[in-house]
Length: 260
Ligand SMILES: C[S@@+](CC[C@H](N)C(=O)[O-])C[C@H]1O[C@@H](n2cnc3c(N)ncnc32)[C@H](O)[C@@H]1O
Image (cartoon, rainbow, N blue to C red; front, side):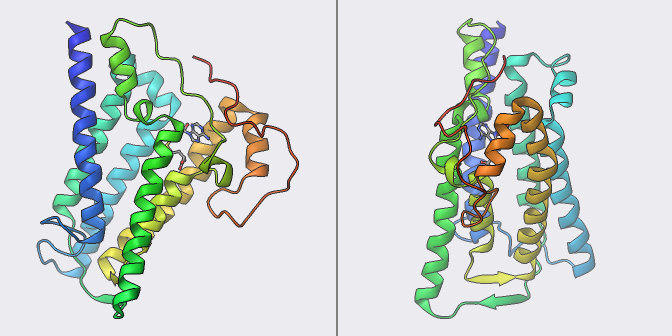
């Protein structure tokens, strides 16, 4: 019974995630979706600001809180390990749907590229950002990241899921966080920047910088030790042109597997 549940739960949460991800592209670009970053219930700016900050904070708390190893250890006492990641995905989906739905517009224009070529260039850059996000998830293990691998293994009666390997190849050879770089490009590259969009881009940028530096990388150093420290020295965090000193070791595509 649990095997069937794990399969359905993991698959359903992943399918909803795909829709939520696609919607995110429309939400940020303001194209092709009914509710986006620049429309919604007209609200006085102090209240709009407060509501939007609460929505963004909810996302940050859910995302960073549930991703910490200590939280996972506690959570898997309540939720079976094979569906822990799918439950993370479910929670992220819910928080994002709430954000799309309740986001309040702050429509004052900060910049507006008038030339047609500039508009298309910025849309193209944003599309590149989204592609970078998607491509990078496949480099580190797309199906593991979104809980499908774990729940399907349980459905097939396989043992505990081995942790996805630590990756330093392809895009991960250029920057340590290509997924986050993709998001930053997608959030900032817009032909029409309103105050609401600027708030979204600025707060998510601050969150990404803090979460990556103070949480994710701390966990990765704890897990991989000198292998990750060496990777930090060799490969820049987000900006490809800020290269570290050359000539250090771990330069293979995939280094040792994580402990299960
Ligand atoms: C949402 S992903 C973001 C990954 C990375 N920060 C990026 O922007 O590409 C978060 C997960 O990726 C894992 N991760 C980060 N860097 C990794 C790497 N080089 N190889 C494998 N997994 C990695 C983290 O342990 C975490 O479970």
